[in-house]
Amino acid sequence: MKSDIMPSIKIFTFADKRPDFIPLQVATLRHFVDDDFEFTVFDNASSIVRSLRIRNKCKSLGVRWLRVAEQDHSNPTIACARPLQWSYDNLWKNDSGIVAVIDSDMFPVAKFSIENYLHGFNVAGTKQKRGHVIYLWNGILFFDMRTLPDKDSVDFMFGNVEGQRTDVGGHLYYWIRGNPELRIKHISHTGHIFSGNNNLICLPPEISQRYEDDFRFEIYAKSFLHYGRGSNWDAMPRDYHRRKTTLLKFWLDGAMTGRIKIPDYDYELPL
Image (cartoon, rainbow, N blue to C red):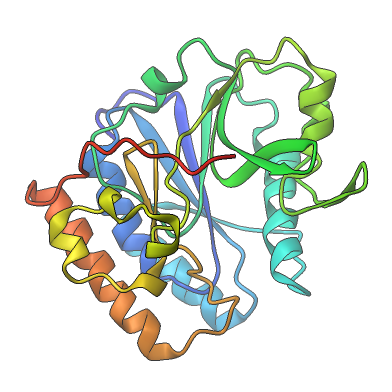
C-alpha cells in the first residue's frame, strides 16, 4: 500500500502448497504496484499444518488472511475453481472498487498501475480458447466492480461448454456471450517460455544464461512473472523446484534492485 488512504484496489491470491511464495509476492507487489491496494491471501490449504504456515506468514508480514470456507481438493482444477467462486459470491461480488486476482506464483517484476491499465474497461484478462469457446484464464484478472455488468452471472467453474472441455473459468464464456457490451482488455502473454515456442528472446539475458527449458516461466503484460506449476500438480522432482525457485528469487531480487529488466520483445503466443 502506498498511503494511509483507504485503498480502492483489492488484490487477492489463493495459497495452498507454497507459503514461501507469500513473502516474495508481498515484497514485489509493494515495490512495483503503483496503486493504493490491500492484499489478501485466501488460505486454501488442504491440511492444518499448511494452513498454519500460511497464516503465520501473513501475520508476520501484516497481510490480511482469510480461510476459504468451501474447499474441494479432489483434483487440481476444482481445488482452484471452488475457492475462487466462493470468494466472489461471498466477499467481492458487491465490491465498489477494483479487484485483482493473481495466482499464488505470480509476481510483478516491473512498475505497473492496475487502475491505469484497466481504465476504460470492465475487466482485463488473458483469453483462453477451446474450439469456438473463448473465456478468461483465472491466473491474472482485473475487474472494475463499479462498472461490471450482470454480476450475478459471473461463474468461474469449468467443464463441458457447448461440447468443449474447459478448465477453470470456462463458464465465463456464458457471461461474456450474454453481455455484448462488456469491455474486455486482453492481457498479453508469452505462454510457456521455452525453445519449442521460439520465445526465449522474452527472457532478460541475466536469466537466459541460467535458464532451463523445462522451467516454463511466463510473462504477462510485460510486467508479471508467472513461475507456473507452483503447486506441483504434475509431480516434478523436488530438485527441479529447488533450482527453479533459486532462479525465481534471483530474478525478483534483480528486478527490485533494477539490475534485471524485461526486454522490449515483440512476441505473444497466438490464441
